[in-house]
Amino acid sequence: MEKTARAIVWQDNNIILIHRKKKVEGKIIEYYCTPGGHLEDGETFEEAVRREVKEELGVDVRINSLFLEFENTDINTLEKYYNVKYISGEIGTGKGEEFTSRNFEKYGSYEIAYVPKEKIKNINLLPKELKEKLIIEK
Image 1 (cartoon, one colour):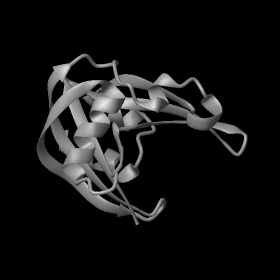
Image 2 (cartoon, rainbow, N blue to C red; image 1 turned 180 degrees about the vertical axis):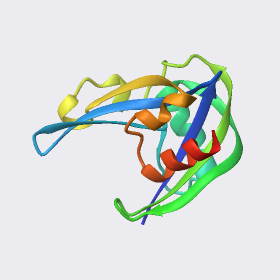
Image 3 (cartoon, one colour; image 1 turned 90 degrees about the horizontal axis):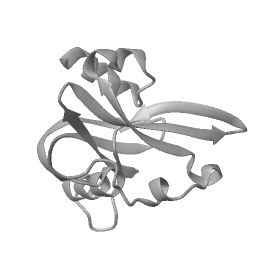
Image 4 (tube, rainbow, N blue to C red; image 1 turned 90 degrees about the vertical axis):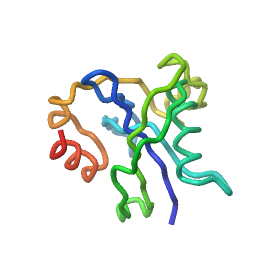
């Protein structure tokens, strides 16, 4: 089972998400997700979430708490979502390959999106377990 670590980053009343578009079986699909990704060999969930946020958003964060943990049977992963606090850096300066490469066929598109708390229910935020918990706890 793969392991992923993801960050819930708030700025004012907005959650910072990644707006994704990618081609699946010839069709473009569109959704939102939190910054994060797979753990590298020997890496803890906490180390992975800090690394991924730096790669994807270009900022340093401090982990405040674990928000959600579950097994995503759709994609066979153990996922952990952490509430994090912005420490330093400029959002949008991430150097991860998915943000710096323009290879849509391989990566699709990745755009940083600021979504107001009250609009979360209106977007296709994946996974649904995260969306449901964010809506309940807002």
